Image (cartoon, rainbow, N blue to C red):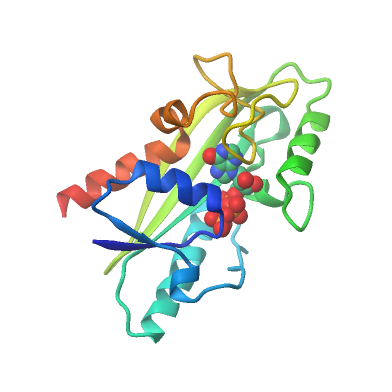
Length: 195
Ligand code: ITT
């Protein structure tokens, strides 16, 4: 089985490759000839996940290719910030997206805040003959400073519930056993197996 991954984020590609079984062959956007950025103008993770997957599906149709497409839209919801940055997580500190600037902005916003609960969410949109959605989330807290070298994005700030370390301090294996993305992929895999 071949699936096209509708993401330009190399770190997501790495995680998804580790989370999906090896008998699924993954194709990147580059491999199918998409090199421009796909617009994410939706107001929810679900809408943006659909925009990315359907953009790629339409591109494939024009080439008479019928591969299924999988996209991932993720966001960090911080309780004390009214669930921001949420759907705007990628461009929290402005355009172009910059992980370090996003983390710095989040730390600044939470400078005097002790209530640091947050939830990381992923919505996967999978388009085969139909459109399917799979969701995952993980609860946690935001650390007081960036810690760790692993992962990407907000990983240096996100401490999953039950741990003292940030995702960036934990191994990829541990992150992949409990992350928002892992939960969403688990739901996706049970759909694939039922097919
Ligand atoms: P694509 O849209 O091309 O898939 P993106 O990086 O724009 O890539 P999102 O819109 O889903 O993806 O990104 C939301 C933001 O959340 C972005 O800043 C990511 O770096 C960050 N992010 C996503 N998944 C994450 C994870 O597992 N750990 C930490 N940060 C993550």
